[in-house]
Amino acid sequence: MSRDRRPMLAAAGALALAGTVGGCGLIGQPQNKSAELSEWFTVTSPVFRDGGDLPPRYGCRTYSGGQDGKTPPLRWSAPAGTKSIAIVMDDPDASGGARVHWVIAGIDGTVNEIVEGARLDRTVEGLTTGNEKAGYVPPCPPKGERHRYRFTIYALDEPAPFRNGAELKDSLPAIAEHTVGRGRITGNFGGEQAR
Image 1 (cartoon, rainbow, N blue to C red):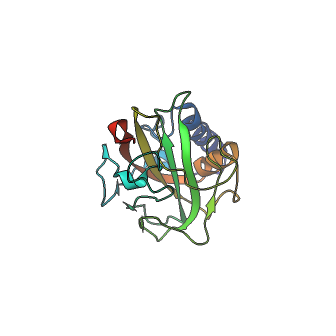
Image 2: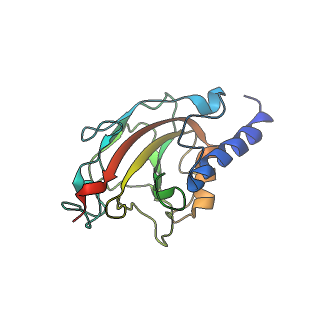
Image 3: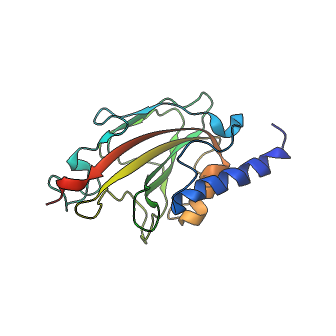
């Protein structure tokens, strides 16, 4: 790819990724079919299937069995040559638009899974929607509501592209600029599970 095209593709990718905060774009199907942004790969979990229910232990304590902060195990098949992995988890069903619950980057490109409740060394985490500290925010929809939680894995062409504690306006475009492939799994949470 020519160096002249890269800034335009990066800008388009940044806009698509930043659209997550407003509830559109990024985590849906690619708007642009370029090889740079359309390489999709498989993401699975041993504890829920795509479109299925997240087990209660991955939710907040408002829900019976909720264990604040416990991430589900995830597995993926990123393309060869991936330098690092980033994960963005969001809730597209939140009132007022999508809410980002987790932004982490700097996972080594040779890693193809995280375990339940993972604490990952040498990674960086960005701020989430409405929070002043970085880290994972578990699913916690209002009582009686059922929301989708999308875990999107990004294969990046360089190590962590943002600093620890970066705001969404900085972390999401940085991820988009360096994305060479992505995959997604969605789990449902809420409804009748609340106490």
